[in-house]
Structure formats: structure tokens, C-alpha cells
Length: 106
Image (cartoon, rainbow, N blue to C red; front, top):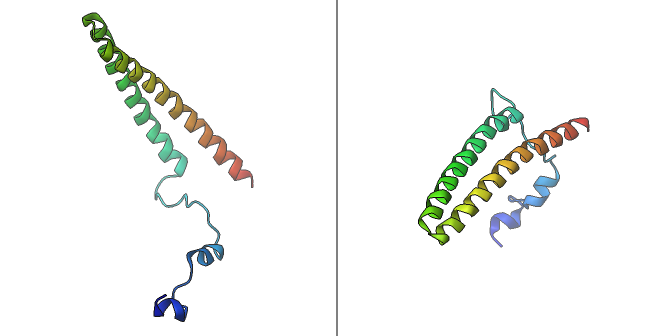
């Protein structure tokens, strides 16, 4: 134990957090609101998912025509991951809107 800790100059983190209300700071991004920032990030996620879907589908088609079954399996996984990513990004936005609406009631 150091001398500063024995003198009480440094307090434990838990005691400091217990004395303050811990809540998200939606005003940290100046000029816009938190839902607007996340709404602007949604098109980036969806465009990325569509690009991965197109590339994976093209690789799947070319690999299947050439008989490379290992590459077909990897491209099929890429297609499924892209579809899952698009679904999760849409679901995440709906879930966030629900959480913000529920939180504003209390």
C-alpha cells in the first residue's frame, strides 16, 4: 500500500461511482442526438452487408462452375453471414428504438 493510499488521497473507484449517478451521456456528441448517430450508421452496415452478399454470391457461382467445393462452402458461409449481418443490424435499430422509448418513460 502506498503512502498516498494510506493518507486517503486516493479513494476506491467503487466508492466514487456509488456517490454519483451513472447514466449514459447522450449529449456527448454535440450537434445531434444519439438516435440520429445510430440511424446514420445503419446504412453503412446495410451497404456493407449487401456488398459482402454480392461478392460471396459471385464467388459461390464461379467456384461451383469450376468445381472447387471448398471455395463453394466458404462462399456459402459468406452469404449466410451477410444475410445475418443485415438482419441483425435491422433488429439492432428496432431494439435500440424500443429501449430509448422505454427509458424515456421512467
